Amino acid sequence: MSHAVPLERETVGVAGRGRSIEWLGVIALLAVIIAQLNGVLNSPPDRDMGHLQKIMYVHVPAAWNAFIAFFVVASASLLYLWKGQERHDLLAASAAEVGTLFTGLTLALGSIWGRPTWGVWWTWDPRLTSTAVLFLVFVGYLSLRSFVEDADRRAQWSAAVGLLGALNVPIVYMSVKWWRTLHQMQSSPSTVDPEYAVGLRTNGIAILLVLIYFIMKRYRAARIERMAEHVAERAALEGRTNG
Amino acid sequence: MADGNNFVIAAYVVMWIGLIGYGVRLHRVTREVQRRLDDASRDGRNA
Amino acid sequence: MPLAQDMRRVRAIIWKDLITERRSKAGFNAVAFLGVLILLLFGFALGPDTEALRDAAAGALWLAILFSGVLAFNRSYQLELDGAALEPLLLYPAPRWTIFAGKFAANLLFVLLVEVVVVPIAIILFQVKSVAGWLPAAGVMLLGSIGFVGLGTFYASMASRSRAREVLLPLLLFPMLVPVLLASAEASSSLLAGNPMQDAGAWVKLLAAFDVIFVVASFLAFDHVIEV
Image (cartoon, rainbow over all chains, first blue to last red; front, side):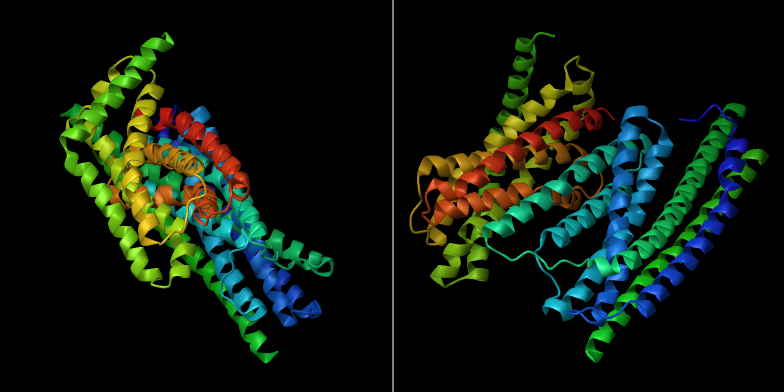
């Protein structure tokens, strides 16, 4: 539904923020370059993994931030069901789109790391499996949105689907863990040696900046798009009443 | 492990393609919706 | 609204759904037959070695039920959609949960009847040696079906009313079924391999917990999605 604020001021409010978001983008880009260069050049090769350890500097931050995105989707969905404000729905959708990207990257990078390390492109371990399920939940969420035209219906349904999906991910994690234990599979080797913690954290924060930048930019685009639709609707209605 | 290095390079390339690719897509989407808003506002005022 | 009145509404919806289903007996026959067909295909894909088939029996059985069962869920809303009966149903001053409960019960009965056909066929085709107790086995089938039907009824309430409903329902539903599928397949596997209940016990408890979580969640979420 339209807000009380006149549309022109709303337009300026959201559209005007474009430039400051781009500054964040530049900062994020620099942060990633610096963190990655530092990680690749300054960290010594691992005892077992050798230089393969450096893949951790992209894989782990992608994973961390994928789950942050998922958390944003869940929270925004809850807020929407509670307050009914459209912008919470748009925030959830934006975070879901960016989350899909990061989850996909996590899976791809995990695969690239796994192949030379364990000899296989995929293992059915709890972390990788629940990430795969999270990816499918995101994809399902976005598919649902693309197949529903009415904005209110789309928002309500997405929120319900988002929350249920969020509920599912920790349950899957736990089930797979139990599943593997029962079949006496070894747990995956630890990917975080304390020696590399600093590098991981700096990369993690740099990618977090990228995540925030992407979500804000996507959210702004979604708001502008809805605004365009509202303006078009209003024009159509006024055109009709003016005869 | 020269072979290992290929995987490291592949990982970073994949990461960058993902990030830059999505960034470019975002720019395009923003331009498109901004254009749509400008068109709609213009038509609205003229109506 | 007194509970007795609500329960009467639930029964009415169950009865309505089942009656229309009976009139189109083709519906049940087709789904049950599809389940058997899927089992056959699994047999061809995984066999003919007896050991391999026995290992795969529980998994193939549950997948056959899942793939054929999803067809039933969209259909349970089809009746209302075709006859434009969903709005009148919503206008009637009844709590929404009665709609969910009615459809859930009707779908559950339908799926259980399909299983009556599919389970014996699976035991035969996959050369299962012996079943460690028919009652526990039936219990596992019931628990697994409850989780499956609960989530399926919920997601179908949306998928049936959107475009591309045939692909949207599995796309939304199947990731959510991973825990229920895991627990059901593991518990069934122990029973079909002739192991006593002890091995399956932990999975059965987990399955029961999943059922409670997912059915309650579906119940609560249904209110939000049926209205709009």
